[in-house]
Length: 276
Image 1 (cartoon, rainbow, N blue to C red):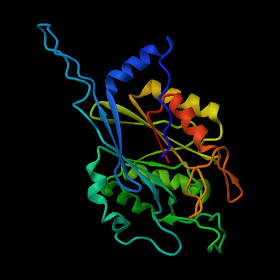
Image 2: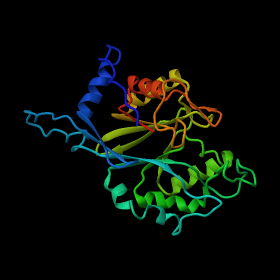
Image 3: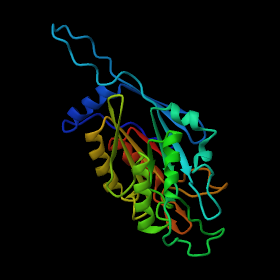
Image 4: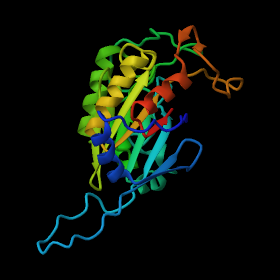
């Protein structure tokens, strides 16, 4: 997770929107819940009771909500898939995932059949393509997932066909998705509008390397929602890659962007939380 300093005080052009968001949000508290699961409590403003004789509308929301973020989720591969249509994969964490008001995860792979694998017919230790049958997507919903991020390198393991099948399977399972170029996904929880966006260094995702474009997209989301959560897929892998470097990071020959600069840009544009 990368966090930046809070954005500066609102300018006149954004003051109205900021006041609306401030009233809805109140206090924002972050807590690390597990290695890849974190909670965020969003407390609402405490407006006083009206003295008017007429009955006033109920508050916009009742109180805090919790959002959990889960890291890389691989649905299956040519080596096999989890039994029980994928349900066994989440058996030991289902209670925790379902306890949150909103659970958001990074789906690394596809729910599809057929199609050309990016690894060809071989695969092996140097290339991984992840795929599970479309009807396994319901395992995400049963485990408690509400939204998944598809802005990552494995969302295109079986090309456009694989991703189209994946999104269709997620819709049938009633799991929302985000991460396509320009995509803003909004869900409602307890009266709050929560916008979720995904960014990665690939053409099928909103680009984390285009900081100007990222700022514009986050600003658009901030105008439409009370809370903005940004997920980014970035960085290198391995036991020797345990610290986020300064500047652009190259991994496996790929330019994976500047994680620090992106996180600061997103927060300055209106993101309340950046996860990765």
